[in-house]
Length: 124
Image (cartoon, rainbow, N blue to C red):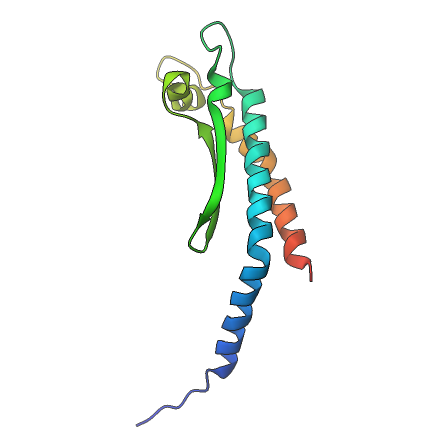
């Protein structure tokens, strides 16, 4: 028994998606990079400070890029020096309360990032 299936419409739709990805990709990367920078700046402003953490906030950095079909941004403290304290400060320990700053920064920036992505997706 043979089963003949016409996939021409699916192939055309896949080609449309690929073209759209090439068109919108650079702008999505730019939007994502701005969101990463904004999140970094917020995290720095929310970061704990004091005489024992004079440089911690400045260790928070961001990076954005493309890996295959994935557009990404990463925000957080650089490892080494006071940056290595990031997970302890954010999450706390058995004897130290958390001082969340990365999560709240992400939570505040997320709606802005999604709004910009939605507007970009609606552009012709």
